[in-house]
Image 1 (cartoon, rainbow, N blue to C red):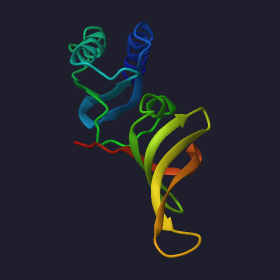
Image 2: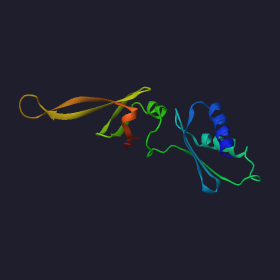
Image 3: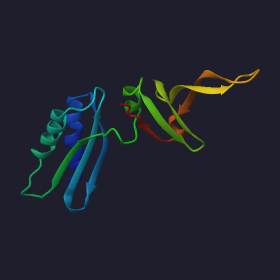
Image 4: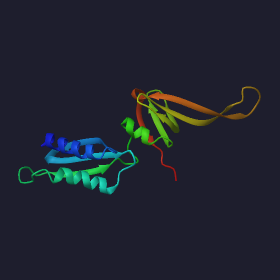
Length: 152
Protein backbone atom coordinates (compact mmCIF):
# COMPACT_ATOMS: atom_id res chain seq x y z
CA UNK A 1 0.00 0.00 0.00
CA UNK A 2 2.86 2.41 0.76
CA UNK A 3 4.19 2.10 -2.76
CA UNK A 4 0.72 2.76 -4.21
CA UNK A 5 0.33 5.90 -2.04
CA UNK A 6 3.76 7.18 -3.16
CA UNK A 7 2.82 6.58 -6.79
CA UNK A 8 -0.56 8.37 -6.46
CA UNK A 9 1.04 11.26 -4.58
CA UNK A 10 3.70 11.59 -7.27
CA UNK A 11 1.03 11.84 -9.97
CA UNK A 12 -1.03 14.51 -8.21
CA UNK A 13 2.07 16.61 -7.45
CA UNK A 14 3.23 16.22 -11.05
CA UNK A 15 -0.17 17.51 -12.20
CA UNK A 16 0.27 20.62 -10.01
CA UNK A 17 3.98 21.52 -10.17
CA UNK A 18 3.64 24.48 -7.77
CA UNK A 19 2.99 21.98 -4.94
CA UNK A 20 5.70 19.86 -3.37
CA UNK A 21 5.98 17.19 -0.69
CA UNK A 22 7.39 18.08 2.72
CA UNK A 23 6.70 14.80 4.52
CA UNK A 24 4.96 11.49 3.94
CA UNK A 25 4.49 9.39 7.05
CA UNK A 26 3.02 5.93 7.48
CA UNK A 27 1.96 5.43 11.08
CA UNK A 28 0.75 2.25 12.79
CA UNK A 29 -2.74 1.01 11.94
CA UNK A 30 -2.49 2.34 8.35
CA UNK A 31 -2.59 6.02 9.27
CA UNK A 32 -1.19 8.04 6.37
CA UNK A 33 -0.05 11.62 6.92
CA UNK A 34 0.93 13.87 4.01
CA UNK A 35 2.37 17.36 4.48
CA UNK A 36 2.60 19.56 1.38
CA UNK A 37 3.73 23.09 0.62
CA UNK A 38 3.48 25.26 -2.45
CA UNK A 39 5.48 27.95 -4.19
CA UNK A 40 2.47 30.27 -3.78
CA UNK A 41 1.22 28.67 -0.56
CA UNK A 42 -1.34 25.90 -0.16
CA UNK A 43 -5.09 26.36 -0.41
CA UNK A 44 -7.70 24.12 1.19
CA UNK A 45 -8.62 23.04 -2.35
CA UNK A 46 -5.05 21.80 -2.87
CA UNK A 47 -5.26 19.60 0.24
CA UNK A 48 -8.64 18.28 -0.91
CA UNK A 49 -7.28 17.49 -4.39
CA UNK A 50 -4.31 15.59 -2.95
CA UNK A 51 -6.55 13.74 -0.51
CA UNK A 52 -9.02 12.73 -3.21
CA UNK A 53 -6.29 11.66 -5.62
CA UNK A 54 -5.01 9.21 -3.02
CA UNK A 55 -8.22 8.17 -1.28
CA UNK A 56 -10.29 7.55 -4.42
CA UNK A 57 -7.63 5.25 -5.82
CA UNK A 58 -7.19 3.01 -2.79
CA UNK A 59 -9.61 0.22 -1.93
CA UNK A 60 -10.87 0.34 1.65
CA UNK A 61 -12.30 -3.15 1.15
CA UNK A 62 -8.77 -4.41 0.56
CA UNK A 63 -7.10 -2.47 3.40
CA UNK A 64 -8.59 0.05 5.83
CA UNK A 65 -6.68 3.31 6.33
CA UNK A 66 -6.99 6.88 7.51
CA UNK A 67 -5.58 9.74 5.47
CA UNK A 68 -4.59 13.20 6.65
CA UNK A 69 -3.35 15.85 4.19
CA UNK A 70 -1.92 19.04 5.72
CA UNK A 71 -0.13 22.15 4.56
CA UNK A 72 3.19 23.01 6.15
CA UNK A 73 2.42 25.20 9.15
CA UNK A 74 3.91 28.60 9.89
CA UNK A 75 5.55 27.26 13.05
CA UNK A 76 7.17 24.35 11.23
CA UNK A 77 10.89 24.57 10.41
CA UNK A 78 11.88 24.99 6.76
CA UNK A 79 13.26 21.78 5.34
CA UNK A 80 13.62 22.20 1.57
CA UNK A 81 15.34 24.67 -0.75
CA UNK A 82 11.96 25.51 -2.38
CA UNK A 83 10.64 26.63 1.01
CA UNK A 84 13.57 29.01 1.46
CA UNK A 85 13.12 30.40 -2.05
CA UNK A 86 9.42 31.11 -1.51
CA UNK A 87 10.21 32.95 1.75
CA UNK A 88 12.75 35.41 0.32
CA UNK A 89 11.89 38.82 1.75
CA UNK A 90 10.64 37.44 5.06
CA UNK A 91 12.36 37.43 8.44
CA UNK A 92 13.93 34.12 9.51
CA UNK A 93 15.42 32.77 12.71
CA UNK A 94 18.24 30.41 11.74
CA UNK A 95 20.09 28.15 14.17
CA UNK A 96 23.46 26.68 13.26
CA UNK A 97 25.85 24.70 15.44
CA UNK A 98 27.72 27.90 16.29
CA UNK A 99 25.06 30.63 16.52
CA UNK A 100 21.49 31.81 16.09
CA UNK A 101 20.83 34.50 13.49
CA UNK A 102 17.72 36.59 12.88
CA UNK A 103 17.40 38.59 9.72
CA UNK A 104 15.68 39.11 6.41
CA UNK A 105 16.17 36.32 3.92
CA UNK A 106 17.46 38.23 0.89
CA UNK A 107 18.61 35.28 -1.22
CA UNK A 108 18.24 31.51 -1.41
CA UNK A 109 20.11 29.56 -4.06
CA UNK A 110 20.84 25.85 -4.38
CA UNK A 111 23.70 25.89 -1.82
CA UNK A 112 23.23 28.82 0.60
CA UNK A 113 20.91 31.39 2.09
CA UNK A 114 21.80 35.04 2.65
CA UNK A 115 20.46 36.90 5.68
CA UNK A 116 20.68 40.64 6.32
CA UNK A 117 19.94 42.59 9.49
CA UNK A 118 20.86 45.83 11.26
CA UNK A 119 22.88 45.87 14.47
CA UNK A 120 24.03 48.53 16.90
CA UNK A 121 27.78 48.47 17.50
CA UNK A 122 30.21 50.74 19.36
CA UNK A 123 31.67 53.54 17.26
CA UNK A 124 35.20 52.86 16.05
CA UNK A 125 36.28 56.17 17.60
CA UNK A 126 34.62 57.93 20.49
CA UNK A 127 31.60 57.12 22.60
CA UNK A 128 28.21 55.88 21.49
CA UNK A 129 26.94 53.38 19.01
CA UNK A 130 26.31 53.30 15.30
CA UNK A 131 23.84 51.20 13.27
CA UNK A 132 25.54 48.89 10.79
CA UNK A 133 24.18 46.57 8.11
CA UNK A 134 25.21 42.94 8.68
CA UNK A 135 25.05 40.01 6.29
CA UNK A 136 25.62 36.29 6.66
CA UNK A 137 25.80 33.61 3.99
CA UNK A 138 24.82 30.27 5.51
CA UNK A 139 25.21 26.95 3.67
CA UNK A 140 22.16 24.67 4.00
CA UNK A 141 24.29 21.91 5.53
CA UNK A 142 25.14 24.23 8.47
CA UNK A 143 21.49 24.96 9.28
CA UNK A 144 20.16 23.03 12.26
CA UNK A 145 16.75 24.74 12.16
CA UNK A 146 15.20 27.68 10.31
CA UNK A 147 11.78 29.18 10.97
CA UNK A 148 9.88 32.07 9.48
CA UNK A 149 9.29 34.73 12.12
CA UNK A 150 5.68 35.88 12.03
CA UNK A 151 5.22 39.57 12.81
CA UNK A 152 1.93 41.29 13.51
